Length: 259
Image (cartoon, rainbow, N blue to C red; front, side, top):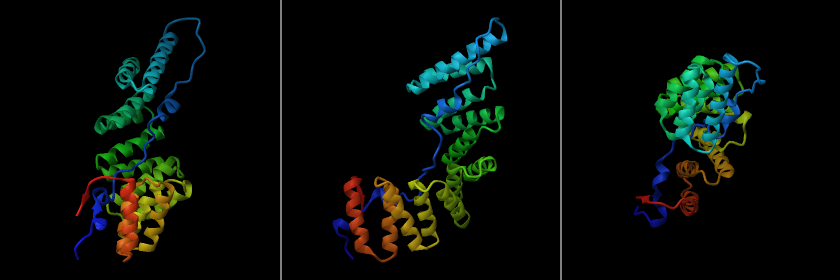
């Protein structure tokens, strides 16, 4: 059958499993990493040195917050010159590399933070994220499992573990984790998106459709969820519904199309 203009599929519709893992980035660094302020000391020595380290860290956080990443890294490195095992400084450096997409460098810094503080859950979670983004899915899944050992209801770890398992083709194992993530956080669109992808892979189309429709209801700008939903409509034989949805999404997400 000859295709009409309305049946062309947008290029983004072929991106069905993008890396949408959630990291604790952005503003979280200063909340998790701001040092406890000590009382002023009457004498110098180690106490005064520690205050100087705290002041350096505080200035690094200030630069970090302002988006002056190079200046922040320089200040965090000065903290590490005084205390090479300062887990907060390592973590904050990793956050910058993570935001910049320098995932191998971020991985090294998260691992340094965890070596200094093994129970640092945000560092463990974000280590899993950067491993995932380097397509080291098995290692990422293990990092998320480690988070869940200490925090069994951690919604981001539950979701990210499900996504990592799905990337490894372990669809049946991924679905229970995604469902657990939804119980903890029923308002996160990506939870429904990944669950929809998993159900579509199992050819459970009604379940896939329900999940994906919920994803786009919660986030009307979720292009990947719309693309997956259109595919499910077509698999169910609802071509007109697929075309109508496509027309709406083309208005929302204008761009090149492919025949």
